[in-house]
Length: 166
Image (cartoon, rainbow, N blue to C red):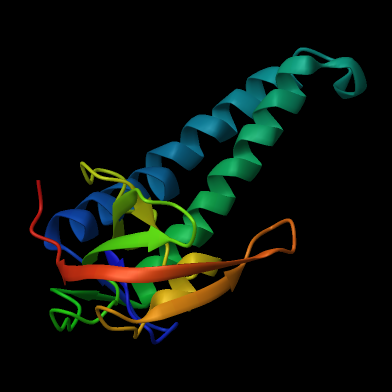
């Protein structure tokens, strides 16, 4: 799955779309029924103020509802297929090689959404500070971005090619 520069569209492979849709169907159907049953069983145990099982089930319910909302948002804005990509230009769905200023070592990663966690290489989000700084840059360009500690770091784009999968 990759994200485009348009924040309203999330590009998904067919496999990722099917996986997320199945997860949503399970959580919003059988998943909700299972957690409601757990809550009801814990409620029958008595005093809710001191009932750890009840509180744990309610917490689990909150996590399930949050994940349902997240999946609905992803799928609502999803397009199945490949994000438009141009070799040599950094963008979502690209395997990017960069070199940080003052470091001789290069690092290579996939610029894509965290939902594409099955990638065999590191995945950096296009919305991260580094991802935002390098998106749209071409091979040979430099970019500067701010680290969480407030310092700036310069990075050179060494390569950018469409991700070829595993």
